[in-house]
Image 1 (tube, rainbow, N blue to C red):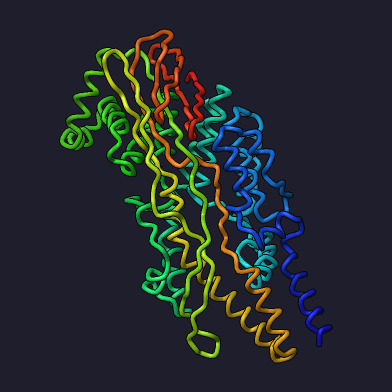
Image 2 (cartoon, rainbow, N blue to C red; image 1 turned 45 degrees about the horizontal axis):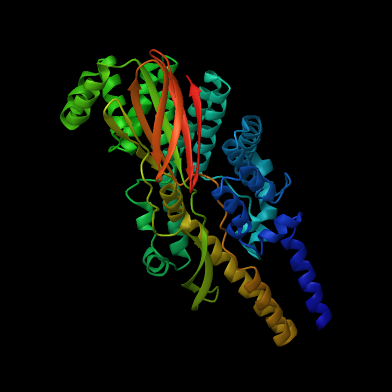
Length: 477
């Protein structure tokens, strides 16, 4: 009897490790990703970005989390001003994402992953980069190109980012409804889920979806305007305004280009809705000589956490039982950040939030819960069937071994791009030409910034504020 049990578990573990050929990938089945990234984020929080890169566990190309590994490295290299390494890792990640979206070859490899996932957990599946993560990949790659004075390369990246969001807008609703139906077919209703799963509504806020972000569109608008493509810039500024309507800097740019392009219908609408912003903008334009644009990254996005939820699930025999399942979740609060502030020529300016990445992540997860739970139900039923079979063939000892294995592998998939900022602000103002010394205040700390303002040009300042760490980089566009 013991020999049969040992043989069974040898087969079970062999199947489980088919897609986990490295030690890191095998550990993914038994240790949550947020735990693996703890030391990385601790080093990032202190501004030790090279140390953070060094403590990331290496992954090979066959690893299910390899693309995510590249994104974490690329982001940290970006923070460390290692543009070349960041650019290379982002480019490789993009190529692999493109490959993963193609054809039968990838689907064939998925069959092995699905067998593994059926008796382990979602960590054995390839991590598909979330849509908001894809758009941010291209946004940061665009900034890498700007650091090399390559505007054309940056424009390619923001167009790719916009394409991701446009395609997602068309596909998202149908996908959500499809998995909601599959989940309900398994006996779990939306009401059941909402009653058991902790709310993330405070973290989500008022955003419409988890894949469109105003920052990406605003950056795209800025770069198109610099390239002299005012119509394209206007379209992107308007998309940013639709997503984040209360940001006064976006309002100003939409109004300004509406007048430049003589968009009479839009002017009439904006004139009635943005009267205060328009007045302020007119006063600024009288002394306009050059533009300074701040992009302010605040904090680090929170990681997913594992929670246990009891759900009523119908067995294959038609009996309803309650099962405890491990699911990913996000904290239900948003960290407050003080805006970047500065005084210049008697005027006080403050940055304004343009995207809360934590909200995008929470909304994306909420929309995917029916898909995640559907897989969990199938997995639970398969595991339970195996346990019963072992109990019939090997008695109580077989049931005990199966139960221990099931408990050990009941892990939520907490993977996400976890080195991203939590929130991004923007601030845009006009200044006289020449060298300007600015004293900024961010998170209670003063930061002196030197910028070179050129006539009818934009100087972009990327400011990163993580805890007590502040750092800025300038781009002359």
